[in-house]
Image (tube, rainbow, N blue to C red):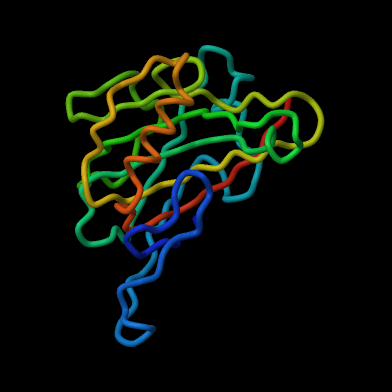
Length: 195
């Protein structure tokens, strides 16, 4: 099961923040349950099956993701899948954006396996380092890389245009900056992979 957090406005962001303070008035009153994200593709913290990775080549598909306990006032969701290992092992100053999906309608309860490429009629937009679609894990042989799926519930729709894959880092920065102060909740799933 995914970890939740970041109930308050201005909570964590896609740079790795943990979440803001709740609206419970200093701990008094009922607590809002945290946003939850689950998948049937793999257990949280376990190995991501080959069909969702670059090992599957062009047949690779995105995993099904589902979420629940959505905060009141959610207008859209942002999903970010990234590999922080290059930064952690100091081989790069930036981690790898494997999938960024924004303006997912607030009424959505998840994304299906094999999510469609490009901008969708409902306004959902997406990009990765290589295309306007999901890019599966592709870590080389050696230590496992940990792929983090971060889901953010927002109180607004983001005015960030569909970017080209070559500009994935710029698009991610624009989305993160636009999210600032509008995060109602956050959930995380982690999978690991190496060749």
